[in-house]
Image (cartoon, rainbow over all chains, first blue to last red; front, side, top):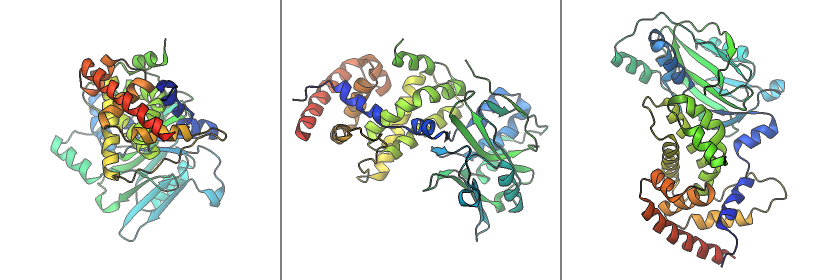
Length: 211
Length: 165
């Protein structure tokens, strides 16, 4: 007969480090794919809806990735990789949350209109406003389907997705940005998706913690 | 206020706001519960983040967030396990040095040998500390049925754990 409490036995699992514990020890961020952009769309006015839908078009695979936020080691440990494939697609691997400008530049050089914003914990880009007219729902759905992104985790723990340049629509930009749930939190989301309108700037503002 | 009650509080609400807060607060425990359920750290990773991804993306108000997140996470984990068939290996657990994991591995092994519903009920009771009423709400059953399930599951699990020794 097993004498000890089953509760105690079950709580032995508390000794196992979760990705969050691991992140805290390593001073890294847990990056989880969330529809943060979709969430933002709900909180802004209707005329921004179409632009936000562009980001919502990203099809996100459930994923928890632990990415370092600092400590890149030059060529030996690049923060990202942009690879132009033989079939015309471009594969993006994000290995750590640093060198946003470099990633944006390489994407643009590969023919992908892109904007990348990595903000420090506690900061988020202020909601953007876009003056775009709403196309019919079926057209928006077609756009979303056409520009589908699937985000995966690579064997070495990078955050990866592939852009099909032939399916990019005029006026859309690949937007990659971080979002922190709370100031100072180790839990960040990383968004990658297509968005229509001007995303050439990001005004950092404090993350507002919802009550 | 107990940890469980705090989680309940966090999980109340609707829309993405509660999901973000709940993710920060609940995810580590949910992850461990799913590790118990699936025996796989990978499945736990996928199920936690996919459940919250769906919560964030949901356009409908989620009336019972606590039950919703558990139901969704279990469902995703079950789907992952079905895809993997019998190929869910003993997990390479990230356990700190010096901590004996043999007892936990025995538990994971035993849990794989009880029915899916019994496993869910056992985890919700013995790890999360939920009552029969709460477990019934999460698993879509009745408290009396959960009581019977738990009685049988506990007896079976104790027998399996005795065999492991």
